[in-house]
Length: 464
Image (tube, rainbow, N blue to C red; front, side):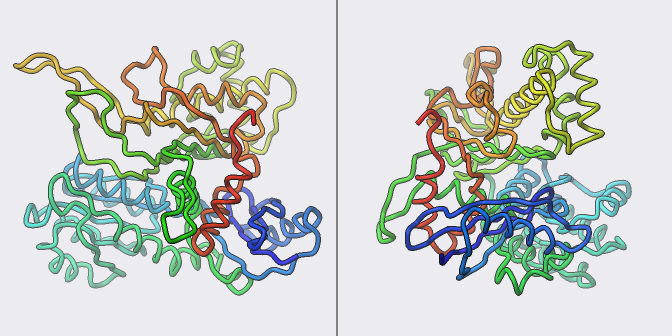
């Protein structure tokens, strides 16, 4: 059988997916442990062996891959005002599939510089000031970065009137100059930075993570895994335009990808106020947005779920005592490869998944707050209003295999207990049961029609 092979080098597992382009169908999927500490090709070979057991012998026409192996793409960003350029830098980084480990605002201090060196980022995104605005902060921060004895490239995307001076200061390290992410107040320009982040990933990060050994076999490692998932959910939501065998998408959506260490949330939605007389606060939100919660996951970050949700909430969800919850999470943190054994551990796993989804979607969605002005009370919206979004897509091993998936999905939706949160109110539930979103994002780069057709077949509405 002729096939296109799609590979995701994940931090924990290497996942392979084979598709028949002509028939626009999924041939099979398989996974094996990612052997990033030795030869990453070993895990790939094991996954391919398992795949051929399912699909039979394959004549592979093309191989494409994405990667989050060895922790993915770690970025640090620096800007001026937290609610403006620093936030613009964060949105640009996350939208490109990076994991933002720290965002700094204002002038970097000696302590900040020491922390940046200790974080060892793959990329530093340097922003600050609208065009023609403040120059002093970005120039000061360029000097602080130039003095660091650390090897990371700098993406310069701040006030264009300071760009030439920053280039001179940073001439001793790899520097890529981009248009300002915030050229004027209220106007975002993050796409050029995202394109450069992806280019840096291809040129530099793949080599650093040892993935270049697979380049001949793979033919092309195209993007970070979260960027591939983002591409897939954009296609699933919006469909194909006229001129590309037009086919509608399912409409605006929220997608949640729950992993062992992190939880990613994507929204493809305008997010504008649903009620009249609402004041919008902060930067305009991108139509397609990703956030990642690096402290929340099912295993490596189980303690983060406990800290974020609280022992009482996990006890409520699991039906266990708070002491049992704490002891169970301590076991999982010590043994992240452990599978649930028995009712108590299954209930704890359900509670962790539900609380992780609840926390991550709450952080992703906007908020609505009542304030008082001289003219009387007013409503202020910060972030996206997702209350009218009809479609919720869930993916990740802990979700797609959980028998209580509908209860977990309910935790992504708005409740009377949190009236300020602008999470979705209801709508349809879709499950990525074959775990193919990253693969379909890769496929969409060359074969968007096949990718959309396969998603329509495989990502079924729950209960259908």
